[in-house]
Structures are given as C-alpha cells and as structure tokens.
Length: 455
Image 1 (cartoon, rainbow, N blue to C red):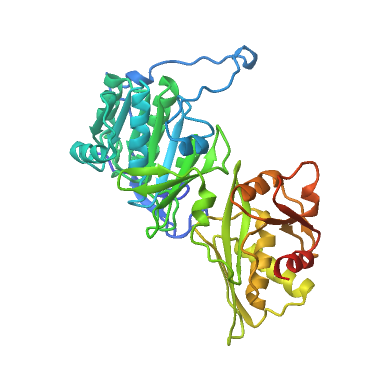
Image 2 (cartoon, rainbow, N blue to C red):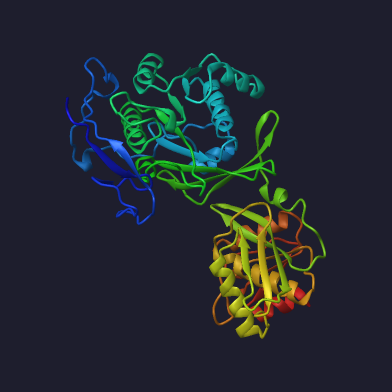
C-alpha cells in the first residue's frame, strides 16, 4: 500500500508546508495551518467536455477592443455595485453573515434574469429543492427558465451545466461543493481552491456569469484561502445589523467597476426591497436640537449620502481616557481630537470620547473630519448644532480645512433633503453654481467652522 502523504496549508493565504507551524510564514497569522492529504488530481476519462476548448496566443493588436456587454439584473442597487450590470463570463464572490439575505438576493436576481429570457441554474448545497421552492413562492420568483439543483458533487453539477447550458449560474455555497478526486473534506483549503478554479474555467470558456456564495469567519472575512478573492473578478459583501431591516451591499474588489459603490436594501416579508434614497433612511430617526449630533455629506462611490454623526464627550475618573469609534476610523478620530486640543485649546485629556455613525454606515473618507470635529466640540460644550446644517471637509494638522472632491453633488443632495445651510471648505466652492434656497458657508480653519456651527 502506498504511503499517504500529508501537508499543512494556511486557511488564510493558502501557503503550504510539509510540517505544522504555529505561525504561517506567508501571512504571519497564528494557528491557521490545517492538515491535508496530498492528492494527485487526474481528469476522469469521458468528463470535462466544458473545458476541452483550446486557446491560442494572439497578438494584442489583433484582439478586438470594446466595452464589456452588460446584462441588467433587474435590481438597480445591484447593478450600481457591479458597475452597471452583470458581465457575461465573469466570476463573482458574495459573502456575508448567516441569515443576512444572500440567498434571497441571488434568488431575486435569478428570477429577474429569467424573465429577460436567460437560462438560470441555481445550485444549492445547503437547502433541498423544496426549501428553495418555498422561498421562491414567498418571493414570487417562479419562472420556467429558472432551474434549481440540490447537489454538492462537482461532477454532477458539471453534468447539469452541460445539460441546461445556463447564462447565469449560482453556487450556494462554494464551501459545500467537493471534488471526488480530492481527499480533503468539503470546505477545506484544497477543496475550495480546486472547485473555485474549476468554476472559473467554466465561466471564462463558456461565457457563463457565475456567482459563488462564500461563508464568512467570525472576523467577517470570507472563509477559505485568501487566494479565493484573487481568483474571482468581483468580491461583494452583504452586510447589515440583525436588529435593523436594512442591508448594505458593498464591493471590495471589482474588475469591471468602482469598489466604492454601495447598494442599500430593506428586508421585508416579501424579500429585499431597494432603497432609492438612502439619505432619507439614515436620517429618519435623527434627533433635533441635541448636542453632539451633526449631519455629514459623504460620498459612497458616485452616490452622495447624508448620514448622522453622533459624538459623546464625558468626564472620566481614570488616568487614560477612552477613545471609541463605530463606523469611523479610530486613527482619524485621534487626529481630530489632537487638533481640537492643540489648535482650539480644548482640554480633552480627562474626557472619554465616543463617536458613532448612525445607521451602520462606515465613513472612510477624510471629508468626514470636519463633521467629527464639530460633533466632538458640540458635545464637550453641550451646545447643539442647527438641525438643518450639513457639514463636510478635511481637517489638517495645523487646523486648516482642506478642499474635498465632488462638493457640488454633496450640496445638491443636502438641498434635496431640505437642509438650509452647508458648512464646507472655501476652496471647494469654486467652479460651480450652488442651487437656490441654500446657504453655503465657506471656512478655512476649524475655528471658523466651530464659530459658524455652534454660535
């Protein structure tokens, strides 16, 4: 009997080692090496018809150039995140917490594509066909061009793809699919890597747009080797709080569009409903006339979004004050506090400071600095800001307010929601005409912004 060879592979980056190590030499993560059985994979005779086409090298000047064709998914928010629609032959990876609504989103998109005359194959490795049918009944997603398969064997799935010849393929989820030639269990590094590579070749050669659903770890990252995210064309994260009904679809990698776009959905009994005006949703529960609350005009990709930024500054009895931020970069919060102490003379060394972005949105652009400074100063002085003021601008270390991009779109969004004033960098007011019935206050320093907002 031949001796069984084993190896150890990292679940984060896929680095292989002949022996176990506590720390991965590839990504320097601890306790990520798992044991696997080495297997020589040979293609079985009579199979692999989908992958038998041969490509020849061509000169780049002989290749026809043109824009990639787009297919509308029927969901405008999903189209926005994808960069305008679904690209045939693309491979997408969708991750999210359990029960967040990934299967519901993809089933709704599959139904919409089937109504356009496209063949859709929905492969579920976690639910039976009856369970999928119950969800389709609830969503009203019934069409004769939408095919459902409950299978985890990669060879059987390949046979179904050959038989149906779909234009759109959904694999829910990639961690449940296994290849019989690989000795590892489903969900292991080797199985996920081999199955993803197989689906990638099917997608590219046959022009089938494929979506892979991936599980996430407790840290929120997609489970499996990091190589998984490098192989696909687009990585989407479906996020949301269990105590709220809205969901955010965010792209962290997109070869066919921007990675800063977000899509907003509202989870209802009849499925996911698109939110066309997210600013109104995020500001619906905003308290008026309360200190520490400001509205920041942020940009999420090409879409301006107005969100509430809340700050709480309270005295502490401990020698080192706490600095906590939710939805806001902790390092930028420390920078803003240092500017308020050094340039504005505010004493915050004996104060705990908390910063929260209402609605679960993550503000990662410098344009939110000025609103954070106003919120912290408002809570420290216990002076409320005007309820219909919108604020944006980048804060420098010398206390200056720097210009930000797309100021016109931010102002128009504030005007559309009924805001009366916008406090913004003076340099961003040049080169465009503001709408009527809204007052623009240009500031050069943080001191001018605090004077305009609090006095």
